[in-house]
Length: 272
Image 1 (tube, rainbow, N blue to C red):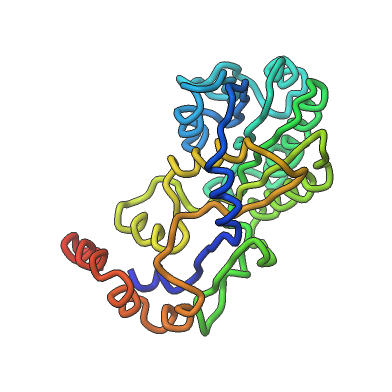
Image 2: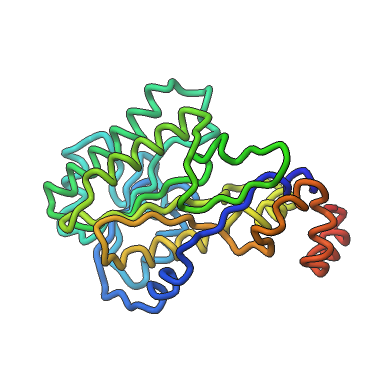
């Protein structure tokens, strides 16, 4: 487990802002979510469906899919966005697709697909967009041979793969088109895909987040008071900036000092 904990940690610098957002109330809205058949899309659907009118967009049939089609299809999106108040855009290719599909397909879906979503929103006068991005795009910036790396919204991404580059390009495009008439919130989401319990638990200590919390973050982001915002969305970590050097040298020792009860639970499961 130590090798998994000595690399990097994510910390949002916007905790105070997030608490203010969390205290707000959303009147019922009509919200369209792209990529609704995937893990995050499904979680967002469960979070929103009881209080808001929901439009689920995906190429795959699912319980949450109301419109089956591709985000590259402008006319399809215009039809789906009729009378919509906000769009949550999660549809994308991800890291597991690297090396399996062509780089051009990453650009077509992750970048050009995002541009088509915006075009369709403008055609339908939809004025709020929440974009699901990723902390993975920090790439090489997370690597340091001498210390764990502390990353926040001010850290400069150094992408490794086409997935990272495509997400960063989509982010840059969205920032460039954001305005009072198209308010954009970007959420760089930490690791939350399905994996073995020991690995998931280890990542949750420094760069992981539960899908239900991701969904809640997207719901809260629908309350927009600025033309453009970008936040890291990650779980709470017991570590601080002052722990970076020690984590690289002796992650297990830092864990025993900071959270002995978690170490006990890990030991009971032979996860240490």
